[in-house]
Length: 370
Image (cartoon, rainbow, N blue to C red):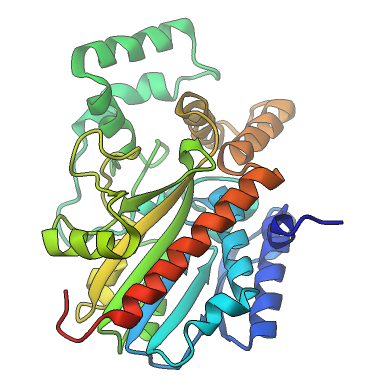
C-alpha cells in the first residue's frame, strides 16, 4: 500500500504535471497551461507552467502557492500542491470568504524535467525578476571566485579548495556566500546568473499574476523551495521589501519565525536580487503583500553546494563522460528532493499549516489594512 504522503509526489516532471492536472480537474478548478514551445522535456514531453485556481473568480484576496522555481525543487512543491487539491477540509475554508487560491505549477518546467536548478538559458529565476530597464545589480565579488567555483575539471582540485579557503579567510563566510549566491549578471555560464532580459518564465508568471491578482486588495504568496536548513524543517524566509509594516504582516500570519535576509545570520539564506515573489509589487501594486519562501531542508549545505555547482559546471562541459553526467544529475535531484516517506510527511504537514495560516490571515484582512 502506498503511504498517504507519498501518493501526492512524483518521480518525474511528466508524472508531476499529470498528477497536478488530474487533481485540478477533479477539484473543478480553473485551469490554464502555458507551453514552453522552444524546448521539450527530458522524456520528449511538452513543457509547461500550469495553474489551478480555486475560489470565487475575481476574489478580492489572493493566495499564490508556486512550485519549481529552481527546477528539481518542483518535486517537493508539486507534491504540496497536489496534496492541497485533494484536501477538501482545507479548501472548504475558502467557501464563504473573499479569498482565491492560485496554484502555479512548475515555474521552471525545463529545469524540473531536465534536473537543472536553472532554466533553459542557465538563468536562476530567483535572480531574474529585476528591472532590466535600469542598471543591473553589480556583484564584484563573483568575478573573484568564479575560477575556483567552476574550474576546468570536476571535482575541484586541492588548489581550487585552497583558493576558496583563502578568499573566506580574507573576506569572511558571509561575504563569500553573498559573492556566490546573491546573483550575478555578467557571466552567462556562471552560477546564480540572473540574465540580461526577462526570461520566458518571468514573462509567463507576470501575465498570470497580473490576471488573477487584478482585483486583489491583499495578496499572500508562498514560493516552495528546498535545499537549505535542517532536513525536513520548513524555514519561512521573508521575500518582500525591507518595509517594517510588510514584515510585520508576514509575521502576523506565519509567526515570529519568519526570518529576513536583512539581519546577518537570521536566515539560512543570504539576500538575493530579483526574487520571483517580487512580481507581486509590479503586477499588483494595489494589493497589500505578504510574501515568503518556504524552504525545506534536505542535505547539509556543504553537500548541497558542490552538487549545485557541479550542475552549473556540467552545462559548460557537455563532453563530460556519460557516467559523470548521470551522477551529477542524480546527485542534484537528491540535493533538492528526499524521496522518503518521513521527509514527505514533514513537508506536507508544515506546508498545510502555512496555507491555513495564510487563508485565515487573508480572510481577516480589511481594506486599507497593511
